[in-house]
Image (cartoon, rainbow, N blue to C red; front, side, top):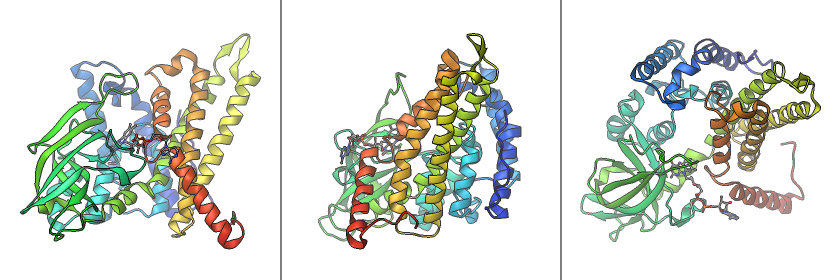
Length: 417
Ligand SMILES: Cc1cc2nc3c(=O)[nH]c(=O)nc-3n(C[C@H](O)[C@H](O)[C@H](O)COP(=O)(O)OP(=O)(O)OC[C@H]3O[C@@H](n4cnc5c(N)ncnc54)[C@H](O)[C@@H]3O)c2cc1C
């Protein structure tokens, strides 16, 4: 079934136009072809089916390009749409209705996040060498920050080092969950500087390094098995005396932490809009199923347990969506308080997504856990979101601190602003 998208009366014409054109491609080109497009991900396929999937994806990418909807996250000078924050957020909920569709619009994590960081912090040479091929699809990349022996939820704990030696940085450390690691041409690696001279920066400060994966000493130990699968492209990587030129530092020493925040911070709003789009799809699938499936002498839609599922999912989606839009508007207006709202949606939206998909799976019974439907993948994705990008508890702490601070300063929290 198609996604029901109509112009939103309170939105400006430009954003409505982007949403409607995006929905046209999702509804006309992507949804009817999902089985072909993602066959290699869902099931074992032969060479013909693999080829058909590639051809179908290329065909749709060309249509996206023609429609001027390519790379919403990139400025126009880098071939993107140059969207403002709100337009991007609103586009995401439409894109995410079909899992994987974002990749057909040029948004593929972690490449898209790395592109954004390279646009902001890269030198002209770095842009030429790494950013442009990444945008063109001639290179793949990963972001290597989390370490197995340190809590990723506390980035201050990371201890991978970059020691200055002449005109080279020497990197030593152990990372894991470097996504897209198997096929990556380079990683952006979060390090702590050791520079006895202080020339390149203060020892202990964080810096991001561009590390080509073919460099001597980069050891991609394994694609870690997750969710019962024996392998994934989330890689464990060891860096053993890896040497890169001084010019491979991305941004200034000391900017590493800020760059990681740039990557995650407001980007969480986009991820939440993605979750809203995915929930919307799970909801539609569930409701449609209840109108056709008979159980114990009647249609599911007429059973009160199922009506409860529909109502609770409606409430979950509405509240998650409105919270996210409210937060996006605050970020767009540059409001300081948005930081609290970002943390609030980072907790609330994945949890709502998890509940909605859980109910949809229940309604579908065995079919719900098959690869024939997108629900099983969504379920795992929703659960993972409660850990990645900062686990729930870290955001709870941040919300509480901000609220108490405001409370003590102004005698209360203003929910109206
Ligand atoms: C599928 C997937 C893909 C990923 N991709 C990448 C990637 O590409 N690059 C990358 O660098 N990383 C990646 N990560 C790692 C991710 O960013 C980390 O898992 C995350 O930051 C949490 O760190 P951790 O796993 O070390 O958990 P920890 O920091 O050890 O936290 C474990 C748990 O402790 C609890 N906790 C933490 N702090 C507190 C507190 N203050 N009070 C109470 N409880 C607390 C929380 O419940 C938390 O879930 C990925 C993870 C997954 C699952």
